[in-house]
View 1 (tube, one colour):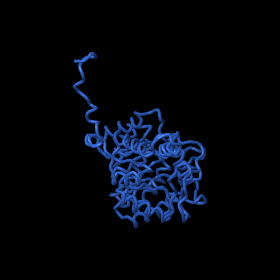
View 2 (tube, rainbow, N blue to C red; view 1 turned 30 degrees about the horizontal axis):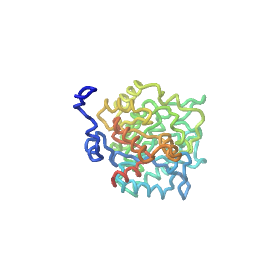
View 3 (cartoon, one colour; view 1 turned 180 degrees about the vertical axis):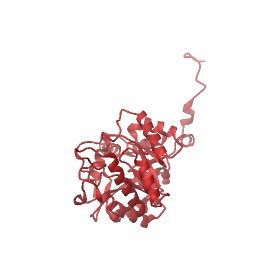
View 4 (tube, rainbow, N blue to C red; view 1 turned 120 degrees about the horizontal axis):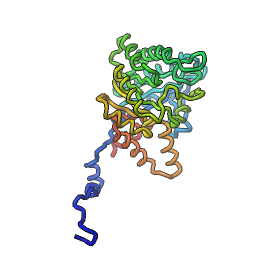
Length: 332
């Protein structure tokens, strides 16, 4: 007994006294296999092109993409999500470069497949926005609206050419109603039943996509609020989740990650399929910018953000730091 009453018998601090003890009782662990590297490959370049809003990230040439894929394998990263950046002259209203068997994304899939085989899960962005001259994720009606059902026909074609190129997983990301079911049918029709679908189940209309627009050379005018989700809504995501699972999604994803950890946790609690989260360009850029200013410890901030995403329920995290973090985890 002391002048302030009894000393506490329960002392949670006892389990925080040393780094080894904290490591032993940690409830959440990051592993290289949790990580997926998003990578951009640009048509017609022989050297990587830096992305000014994402320090350390580039639009790869075909050769440097192969090298990045090999480095990811060596670091223990599980997957790579590929985004194609076509030459501006090849963009059109229908995004035909996205379904050209010799388009940049299909070429990149074949390149990575030749470089690393099945040692890395090769994923592909299945969307039209990189290939359209208007920058939207689908084809437009005469009055400028995104035509959902006409866009689904284009997605079916994209799925088939990506599968023919050798992709392991397609990621339909355009937030068209019915996209997962149409893509599944398209793949099964050509005997590609083994190609998996990572559904962009909850993809929000976010201010944090800004740097990504530079990364893919987006031609977007206007916004995507009529098809991407409203940041105010959570129950809507659960409806999207039910639909994607019914249509045959093998894995589901929440994007962005950091501002939507509550959505991620709800999704993870509700399903028995693997759950991914995408730590997007704006999340990356904020940490890099603050670290450059000396306002935060870069390495600690990176690990803290990733641990938070993992703790919220993501089994897989798409992050531009994937290879760097995987290397550090293996050497820890």
